[in-house]
Length: 339
Image (cartoon, rainbow, N blue to C red; front, side, top):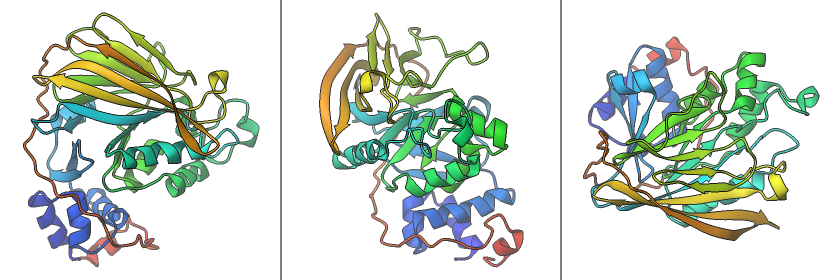
């Protein structure tokens, strides 16, 4: 594939999955090609869709550059949007429980859910009781990338937590940067909290708070739902005009020993959020078990977001295997070979 062909495909607005099949390569190999473009000065931003697809676009997006808010584009007729949520995976440690991550991802695939939200502490990092035995940060990141499931119809949105941050602080390696460069369908805009806009509502995805990291104000005209991690225990709080969902841990260290994940469905009326429904799942003996359901009515006020398009994507299953590139993907000489 020549560089000019890749640039033309981006200009034409092809989806990442369409580009991978067009150029007869796995999506992960396409990501490496895109990284080369970005490392050599091309400015790209990404548009994400509720059906698990995304595309690259040229030019600076001032809103994303300034706020890091992420828009998830929906169709006009989408009135119910579901996603799977998990938190506190603590991978690459003796606390990890990978079966929960696998079951949560499979639950999304089996139920036609195209978005997964993760609320921090993806890795165990370099803090806590296991500090003395912690693996090097770079090794933890590579374990995550080698393990975390892949499907080109599912996008994972997340924030990073204090354990992830400790790798950045102690080992000088930024998990956010490494993961999102290797996996473009994993979206990690920031540490601790970030805003995700769906239709005319906003979700605050958070890990923990501190004096320096203040959550956006809930219950005003904009924020009607917070999904957060860190507590290692499930809790659902419903107030007059907003709800807070604290996620269970997806690792062994869980309050009352209950680990698992949550499925959340948002219902919209005239593009305004009016109901939140959810299901809490645990994983016992390798099987997912429904523990309970919850719901809340929300008096959603229409705000300035309008993340709606009448798109018609054809979902393509990629037949090409991933081929590990043994050449440094940041090499300028390697890029020149594609000219």
